[in-house]
Image 1 (cartoon, rainbow, N blue to C red):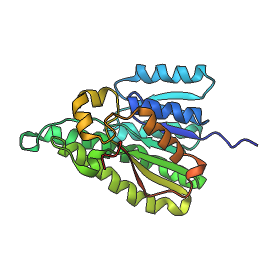
Image 2 (image 1 turned 45 degrees about the horizontal axis):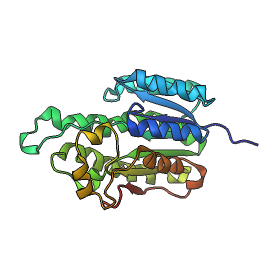
Image 3 (image 1 turned 90 degrees about the vertical axis):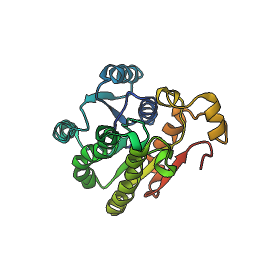
Image 4 (image 1 turned 180 degrees about the vertical axis):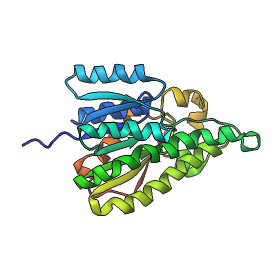
Length: 243
C-alpha cells in the first residue's frame, strides 16, 4: 500500500536552489507548493512543467515580510490538509560594508530570511504537530557559519536561522518532527554569478568549482524523507570543502 502523498511548501521557489528543491521533492512523490513574491510567472511555469509530468504541483504568492498577508495565505493552504514538509529557502542579500550600511540595508535580508521563516512556519506548526510527522529544512549559508566581508546583515540573518532551527528542533522532536539546516557554499546560478568570478571560486573552494543547485536539492530531499527520521537539530554544509 502506497504511503499518502505529503504536501511540501518551498519558499523562494523561483530561485535556482528553490526550483531544484521543488523538482526533487516532486520527483520523490510529494505534492509541491511553490512560493514566490515578485516572480510568480517563473514558479507558475515550473509548476506547469511538473504537472505535465504527472506530478502534483501548485503555486502561491505572498510577501513573506508581511506577517498578516503571510499568515492569511499560508493558512489558506490548510483548507486542503496539513503541510508536513516546509523548506524555508527564500532569501535576498543587500551587500555592503557595515560602516556604510544604512538601516534599510541591515533590515532587508533579516526581514526576508529570518522574519520570513517565522511568518511562514509558525502558522503551520500546530496542524503539523497533530499529524505527528513533519520535516522542516531551513536553507542557511556558509556565510551564516563563517561570516563574509560585506555581508554582516546577510550573515546575521543566516546565523539567526541556524539558532532558531536548533531551538525549534528541540521543541518538536518528541512529535516526530525533524528540523535541520542546509548551509550551501557557492552554488552556480544568478546569485553566485553576481558575487563570485571563476578565479575567486578557485581561491575560496578547495574543490575549485561552484556546486550545482541539485547538490543542495538532493540533500534536502533526503532530509525530508522517511530515511532521515532520526536526524534532527543538525547543520549540513554543501560547500566543496570550504569548512
